[in-house]
Length: 257
Ligand code: 13P
Image 1 (tube, rainbow, N blue to C red):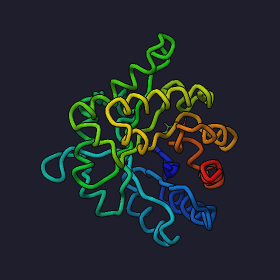
Image 2: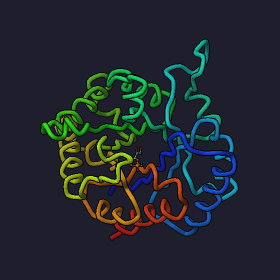
Image 3: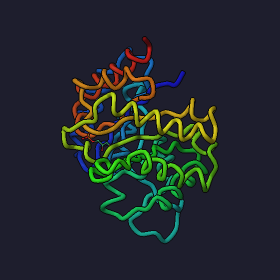
Image 4: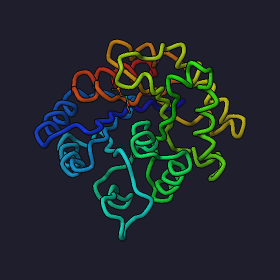
């Protein structure tokens, strides 16, 4: 049985007040909730504050981040390393988000290097993959996802995916309110798992595959009812404690059933 993981990607949103309020709210909302791992990825500047708020709430929430550099220290102005993330208790690190692929020209190969460096440092990569609207309309979704995963498999072996998280985020569904249907998402998740199973059934059966793209409390249950959807990577709805907790609770309930 795969354990569901629901993660909030806060993107470039926050202030000291917002981070404190949101985490205090989440600490309260998640009291007694079991059967789901709940993680948050605040902007880097707020990871210190987030670590303290999470500890004050009894460490029910996993701390994450939205990016990493390929070095642990040195002359790399403006960057942030796995060693530093670990220093603040962050473990689940988002890489390859479509916004970084687009605005920072991050290639599959570059993302795969980040994946390897996170593993080397004992951190959990949350590898984002997914197709654009044009690729979707051209029927290229499965091929795009396979190519993005192969950048890791072909350089590090399929075993590298063990303990990692894959987040399938169709780009056209991100922040648009135009979520993939649960059935379409399930079909793609199954194809991603089958692609990995062709190399190792064991790894494929274990790897957590999240769906991301306009996940809300209203549609979360339908996703989690699907056998190959093991959680969610949530943007907008993760900025509200009640909404995000409702999504986490939906995962816990659905995967217990
Ligand atoms: P939204 O939930 O706002 O669509 O964002 C999804 C996302 O990009 C999470 O990484």
